[in-house]
Length: 205
Image 1 (cartoon, one colour):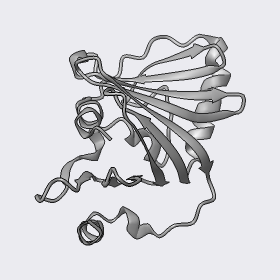
Image 2 (cartoon, one colour; image 1 turned 60 degrees about the vertical axis):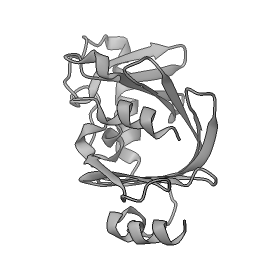
Image 3 (cartoon, one colour; image 1 turned 135 degrees about the vertical axis):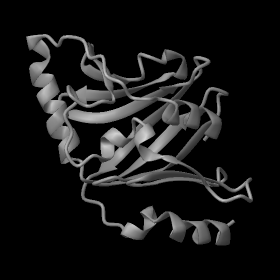
Image 4 (cartoon, rainbow, N blue to C red; image 1 turned 90 degrees about the vertical axis):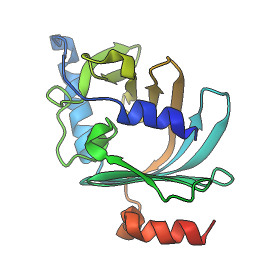
């Protein structure tokens, strides 16, 4: 992953809400989004990421509510992102300084890991749009739009998260496409432990 673009988009959003009025026709879609997001308690999914420079990388995404996420990139990327409920840690094999750490609450991806979600009242959500048969949730800070935004894209029949787009302050977009989503996956909770993964990541370099 182009870590610079991920971090600019994911940690630069201050998360104020200015949600437009929602029409009655969207109520069923919104109810479906809330039910779907609240039902995602344990997930393992393959993903493909398309970076602004034209490169593509693949990996595995893990989610365990509340609060825990992991992006494990396939070789040769040699990168890892872990959220433990409080901290977002970004591991890079090119660095000898250990993972870079950020408050997890500053990334709108934290919406996925919340125990209970309501997209119409979440401080992350700026707007909800319908585009053909897909719903799009836009997240950004209206007081600092120069920081960029994130758009989460869902199929609606049935509801399923398919993609998110991170746009940095320069307008460059990183697309992450989810594939083969497993909501009954079994995995150890220590994969979300930052301290444990520091030693494991360094040992496997």
